[in-house]
Length: 110
Length: 115
Image (cartoon, rainbow over all chains, first blue to last red; front, side):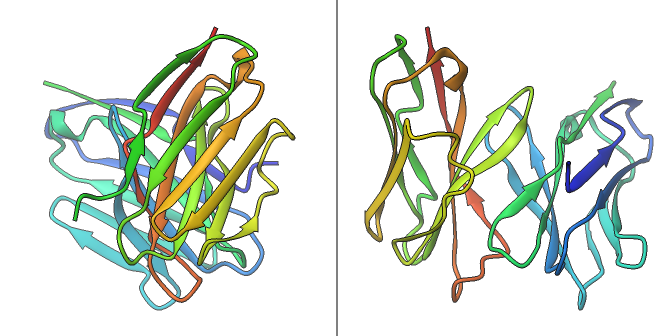
């Protein structure tokens, strides 16, 4: 059974729209949650959220961790075509490795 | 720093052949991870090393897969014999820390096609 579930699986928006991507998880001994952006290459790191850092912001992107609901959201405001990518959520539990969700494919149209 | 270096970037081989993928971690990073990504299964962890020692290889699909890290600057993932279902993008990722790596930096990946 999947430990990390992302929704929606895909999303198409117009430039300028605001989008919210969701990630829910079910792991024992949660350590941290990470968001990555993947275009036609390797994932690149966006944010890391932990119990001591539940909200992060960088430019038009922001993310919040809800430990009670075991979930996180990634917000992108004023979307641009360059935001088109697959956004991956990953959770680290008591081990070292990242448990990835299947990702949300975002397409921003001009 | 050049980042994580992987080679080759693309590999096309025939079923039954041996395939060796290579990874050079970021200098100073002591954790190294091998992942496989397919459309069907997404990103999956195959194995990870800490200070050159394999810590968890439970993700290695079967005995045809093996990984080594002979020193801090080099790791290999070998598939022998390869099968068409091994076709995927294989990523190497590395991280720094005292054994617990919360941020991992990915290499560009090796796209493997097994005919």
